[in-house]
Length: 174
Image 1 (cartoon, rainbow, N blue to C red):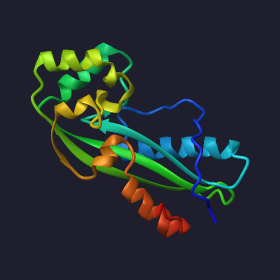
Image 2 (cartoon, rainbow, N blue to C red):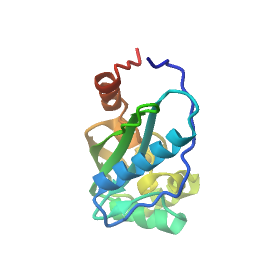
Image 3 (tube, rainbow, N blue to C red):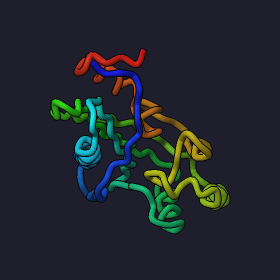
Image 4 (cartoon, rainbow, N blue to C red):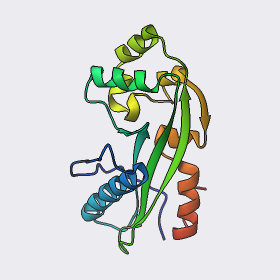
């Protein structure tokens, strides 16, 4: 039914997250919006995967707008547990019945000395990451423990998504 060839298409539209909203609902809504925007532009049959990830620590922490906001986020997470939510959409572009779900993992940061925060900010990495860090990059130095799916924290719970793709679309990566 579907080939294993893939194409990356950028979602259109403005991403709006309510920082005080339920993180599971917010990421699923964002993934739905992204996936539907791609589905409108797809000119052949395909299986659409769209996702969005946020960090939650009392409120939703998306991507920081600047260095100062990134620093505030890192200081707020220092020495504490927080949650990472990824919402994802799977949809056959012809049938247009979206399947939307989410995954959640927990992360604990070390107590972060100011010199580590300053160094990390200088790398530029925090500015395009939810919660101002990327566990797969230099941000790994901030992380003491995790509970749950590491790949979810990176932004795509691929094992869980593959299970859903096999169940719902008979699609396998292997």
